[in-house]
Image (cartoon, rainbow, N blue to C red):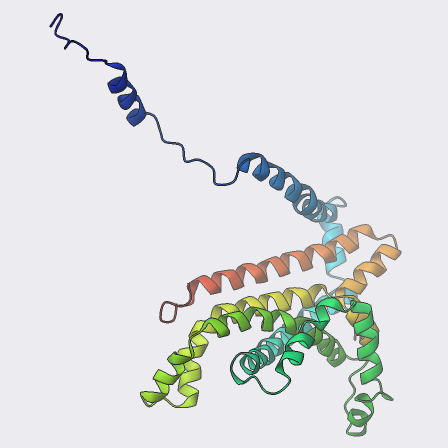
Length: 299
């Protein structure tokens, strides 16, 4: 032994081991090229989504706050916004209730022809909105197959706010069904059987077993139906009648402002709709996180 070092002993492995402990460990990426892919995705999202939204938010302020307040305080604008958000809210509530019933029929009851019904629910996704609007107007007009019997009892649907709600329910219902149905199918039927065995009535089973597990899906479906209803245009303009202060929706008012070369007024209405829709989605997301999980099935 010379100099306190054992013969044949190499200090390099020990030094490398110490360096490996001191240096931070880098987890290898699961997907090759993950960082370039992430950067490219962020660039495209910024160009396609964030940049247009930023332009929409900045355009109403170019003429000054006074012009923005004047555009939003107009009687016609307020009536259009009130009609769009009111009918979208009512339609989203109806879509949530009807979507829950349809999802229950498809997921639990499965009557004869349920596969055809399941396929027809997706029809509003594939059908052009203008075609849907013309079809609904033809059906619910005073001389239509459904409008004529309703007119005899004094109920008008076409060219009224009620017709707008009918169109919004038509386009918003598939969102609720497609969100709730997978959750309902994954929910074990044994939970309902166990609750019934313990003496729970059908109403108690639905309220205490099924609904807690379905609340997040219902909240998501409600938010999607409401956001779709606020911005819906093609299926509404034909059945609405488009009478100012009565049945004129906000998206149509934006088009009218653009035709009048009032770009600031059109952007102001669009900004209000954007903020309201974003706020609704944020509230729905917050509500989903606060809802308690049921039996560990829902996070």
